[in-house]
Image 1 (cartoon, rainbow, N blue to C red):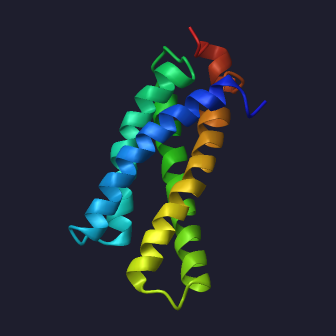
Image 2 (tube, helix red, strand yellow):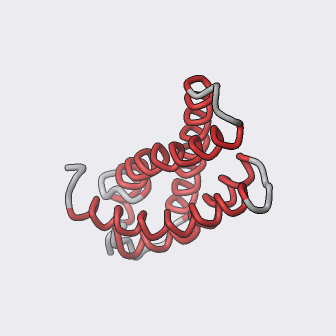
Length: 143
């Protein structure tokens, strides 16, 4: 089941993480003049570190440490980030071509956050912290 207590915990953690990360991303882009990719990447690197610990311990209640979890978490985040932000900027630039580049980038960053959140939840739930992977059956991640 996708929408359950785990989803709710992931959403609460994500809201807190998103507020902090979005503030950093939009300040970097709009006030300090960093580009689209740098601003969004810094958001997800910092947010990813916080997210790992919150989701591992609180959302998914995983106590064991393993190289698999760390590598899978990084891979899911990187793939989700690249896919979400590439799709967002492509679609926004095509559909809102009459807007300024700054407006397009801001809208694309907001859209990218939404796409990323959905992809990241699915990846963390069913790949990284799943109790049904071949790896988790060997080491019992929930112990």
